[in-house]
Length: 112
Length: 505
Image 1: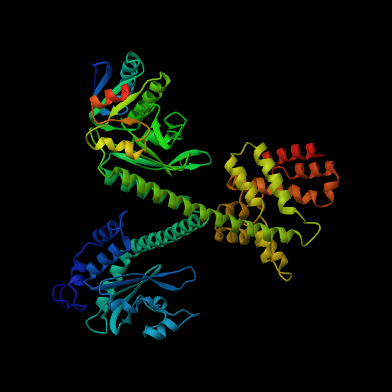
Image 2: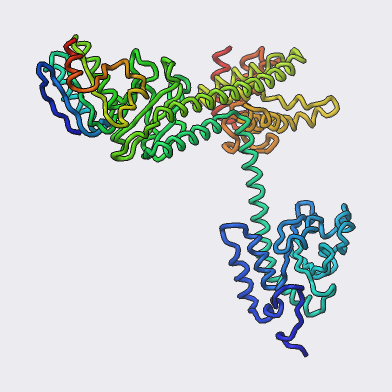
């Protein structure tokens, strides 16, 4: 997995590439938790180019969402473009997360 | 004098096998025949084909003598229409000559002569006596056999006899094994539907893996608060030993998100060689899952587009399987309760036996626990104790003594037929066996008696003592137990029983 942390104006953005599975989940958890803290509890997580998310990847996303709430911030997720986005429907977590169409919409959602 | 080459064909439509036979070295033929007795396939069929080939006969039939000396069809090879009559007994014995009358077969073929003629489907066959049966070869070109042909057939039968006997013995053994397996399968079905449940879940996970294009997967089902992996497909060997119960390390449920499962211990799964796992629990609207399906993707693989529907369907099906097996178990439980009711009624016939089954069950449970028996065996012993004398229901006033000796067997047979009680049968059967072999019905000795049966025997002895005059005198009770230590009773059971009796007094 490749994780790139960048800033989009005042927002902290993490762009993820590759697969979110047992091998990559711990790395995503560490890096994204750091980015979340750097963003004052808010983060846009761009998963548009993620090919696959399993139950460990989903566990990391839920952990991040909880951490953002704890820090009184928000987590906005750009879901995968491909079939990996099914995981949200499959697990009925579409309404649990703030799913946005792109990074810009995500930034706006954090500011709202 | 005719030579081998110009000897007439004996069999109609056959090859010149009998002529060839003359030229085959006896040892070679015997080893060729014995060589057909391999480990695989239908040996008797192969052997019959070899014998028919050596003789040059188009059809061969063999009958085997059963325990009562009756000749029963064992196997036929060749023309089925010709051998259609073979199911009739070819030789009438003293008790039954119906077979002979029906087929026109000469009587006592195996007694008077080694080779005779018999008629199958209105065609003449040569019948040759074997040690354990009769071999028929045919059809013959003419309904008569010359001295030379008889000699050749007898020679062939002599060569084939040992091999045929071995094949017949194995065929018989195989038939017995198959019948035993059928019985086991039937009793498993009767016991409940655990096996069927696992089989159904296996089918579902097989379907899930092949449809999703995943590498492997598993199905787990909740039993007593824990999840047991009921079926796996293509998973590393270490996987089946993992505890997938949510909150027990590997998987976790998420507060506020019913039905959702996430992987908690990524390292634990990677240790057994799994790099990705999609786990879904069901039913989706339940706060606690009842079934869990897990799919392990191929390296670099993705989820199919219809994965959601697929998993939802699987969970729905798994819940149906679960429901029906629960219903089957409930039915089985009711049958067992009915047996208990019968035993209760049996005890109530006399004041001396009132509450006997309950007392034996209570004692057996205490004994089993003190002896350190696993919980499963303890449960089994208690359940068997609750119905151990059910065979006495078959007793009549006229045959009370016979029923006393037969009741362990009768009771075991009854239990074996009752859904949910089949596991109790071996214990019921053994509850009158003695440690030194002087018990009944089988006269088993020591460890050959199942532990559950030994415990049951000790508990029953104790209950009988308590329910008779000895119950009033604790010293007499322990003395009676000690006298029977190592003769009637398993020494360890007897010691534990003494301890129990001393505490109770």
